[in-house]
Length: 372
Image (cartoon, rainbow, N blue to C red; front, side, top):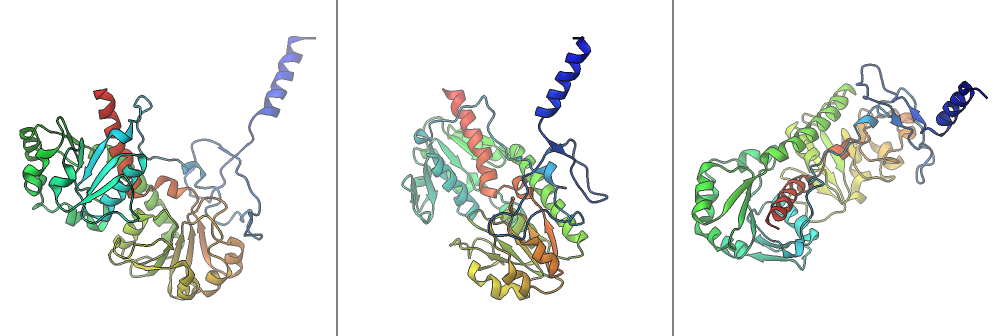
């Protein structure tokens, strides 16, 4: 047989076994992905027998598939995670974000000390102290208060706050060769640390790309909300959340002037977001009539006939959950509700605690490896 016969045969076999791909289906004017994407699994997920493939004129079926990327900073592959049980870290910040990072560090296995009240629920590897000197005594790392983006930025960047004045000689009780982890390392803090035999390491440059990428994803979401004819300024909106609280989304909604409500069964969040009303998920059907928009982040049948039927006619429903999602889109269309399936966007928007620890933990891991 000729070589052309075998060549054509191998080409046919290659086409048969090649992964099936589809072009991203998008509305006119939406950005095109840079390449083809794997064919998604479609069908009617359990819990939503009527929810399957959406009509082509519904924005958000596949147009964000190319953006389902995780941009959270992780330690380079050449950096080996340390034996966290031998790492002692003192957290000097007392805000919810500082404590969220401390909890993640303790969950990783590090020995953690926090300033102020104990973490709830309590963790075996976390100790709470009333004064900074006790928090950092004998610690290898001290984490200075973090600067959260959003509404709290002005308070966090208050020029009157300076770590070298706030903690003074208390930092001198750390272990030999200990390190300060700070958002920024200015000259005054560096000189003060050097006088105590400490070194300062900043992470602002590493953190900025993560927050910038998350901000771009939320900008994309808000652009689609505006395109749908909904306005956020002065509007009552509800964010539905499970264990993972989308704090960056909430902060941006507040900055946009929305009156934000958080529907969740998680406890202890009443004072975490000033100006946000927290309500249990069981009250959502009763409260729905007053919302102009609902942003759902729970992967499961949450926004169904009860919520969709009680929403105002002009209300917008945004499903931010991964497939199978949380909104019954076919019922929403039957009821004339505006709806957006913004699948994959939250993969680009980590929680603030995860974003900060991915950088701080990666920095500590790198420092530990350099010392070994």
